[in-house]
Length: 221
Image (cartoon, rainbow, N blue to C red; front, side, top):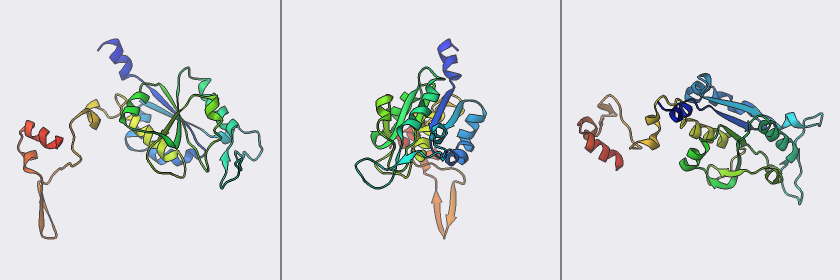
């Protein structure tokens, strides 16, 4: 194994997540593949609550928007200080700014993000975060879909999962990443036939044939 492959294999990515609700991640990041990746030190996940960077004794971080409108806006300075606390420790980090108006997240983006040792993911809430943060830092504005969610925590989990599974060792075998192989959206396992309400359900014959070329062609279709 050459030096490049060794460095790639032992590549440790840290996800720095800026959120008002770090507790909302606990069940997901401690379970299954992501939980095992953390335990095996394939990835790290750190949380930064903007409330920790306020001077207000009540830890208030939201204010009414200028120009009027419903809801509240998260102040810029607590978020800026949260990002700064990360950047003081790491030399190069990609900042992901989650927003419904951002660039659509996909596998191409995930492959780009996995090359960084540190990802800072900023989760918005309420009516959003004061946009002046984006004047202080260079950010990638990202959306996980053409819809609006209550906050950025779910999109952050989507990005974390999609990027982490591309890191060598997280899935055990790199071939487990579906994008790296010919895969079908339909999958089958034993038994070959089962009955439900007097009707038989069978596995497609081609999957039982042992004919690899035909199986590959079936998967392509």
